[in-house]
Image 1 (cartoon, rainbow, N blue to C red):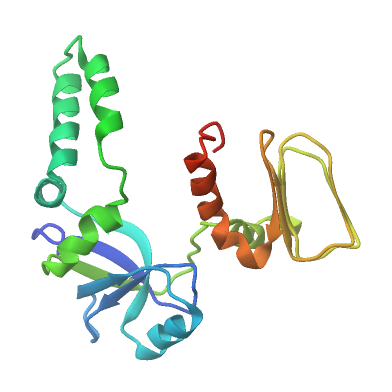
Image 2 (image 1 turned 90 degrees about the horizontal axis):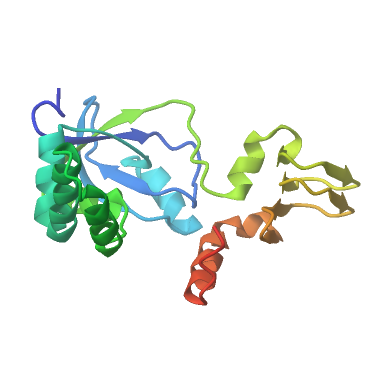
Length: 224
């Protein structure tokens, strides 16, 4: 109903621990099933996460949204006009079966700003009082790093490769065809992706995104 009335609605997960790997939503206190959102917070340090959980008005940001298309597009146009103009031009060309649509897509798409919907639109919409939240207590995991993925994999291993683990514990291993052997190690991430091999402590899995950014800055656009 809130979305139908023109609100941008998101689902907030009731936190069960002071998680530092998730973003948070701050919603007004109360028992209402739909609450106004006052702010979005990026991934906190542990002391801040503890404070969020203790406060009782913070929820995990699950990045699940419900909205009317026209309301969302109006917010994109207000906050990201360059992105709005580009995607609407592409959509018009594709919808109209323009024979030059492919060329337009190839020309315009690379010039558009690369930004998440949370940062580009939702945070600004919340500041303008346009976002509501539905609190939910349900099983949910944000699989955003190797440590979290390992907690969901059977025996902490996955992929198509052959993995042998000897006298090792707490490791996350992802193979990509080659034989991977672990001997006498603990709490590691070992991810063999064919063109790259990652080895790091599980406790530092959140830092992998920074490594990817550094490699791209160094010109390694072949690595994903």
